[in-house]
Length: 199
Image (cartoon, rainbow, N blue to C red; front, side):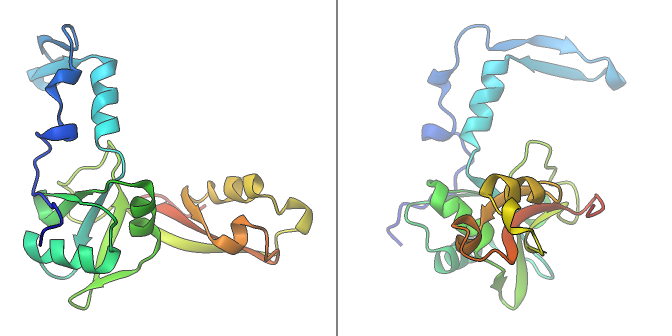
């Protein structure tokens, strides 16, 4: 559609720049202790490159039905309306990894749902280094939560965010909460770990 979308495996361009690596970054092959399996050791710098490279990425999965790459691509453009090109990688168990160019596009994708495709809920979560596509269902989701009855003297952005962090990582405070226009409640978007109790 002329928007520069690529079905990338993250081996090209900024996504996998071999020039970033220097001698000593990749360690020698070693025999791992656990189960006697071979392992590869990387320097901390390589891990930093990988993590930076995958920043502003989300993992999505359509619950209740499968969706093909091209269909998801068009739906994502229609729903999220990103300001720049995106990259999508299909993973195991019908997960997709989507890399967005800007922080605004990233936050919008995470917080302005719920997103519905073909009448089914498109789950979305930030990419985390511990994420495994081997799990059949998402282990975390992004939700909006309210905190009621917060005393006015505590109504400060830093305090509100700290309270939200008790539930999960705070992605966004809504405009009224962030600008302290409505002191009766706080409204924020957080990453909810489905494997843990709420409190």
